[in-house]
Length: 120
Image (cartoon, rainbow, N blue to C red; front, side, top):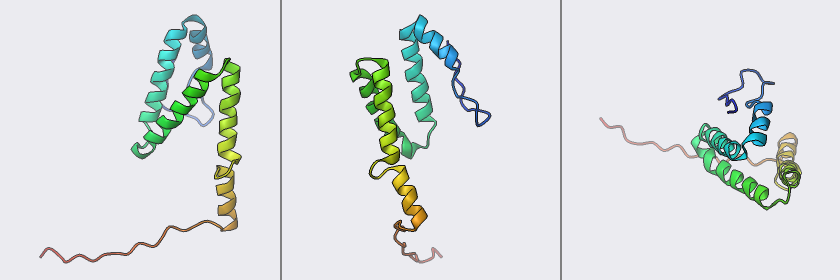
């Protein structure tokens, strides 16, 4: 069974042991898939609650790409394209960073501070 680590203790230490996961995928694909789903769910559940639904939707989209791909390599290429699109495409991270760098970002609207009568 692959080792699942909750957190990497160092910045360069991976969260999973690739060799163990690879061996499991080759020897028992059903067990591999069960562990993969469990690990993903544990990872999403450890995120802040307000991000979990978005991450589950993204994982669903990734799973659909995997299901529709003819080969694992085809799925890998499509998922890689999705990541690049989120980085460099319209509304992507690169665009947001450029807006911040140039000062062309929208500040959140100022909130009014309400005064409430004291309870005494």
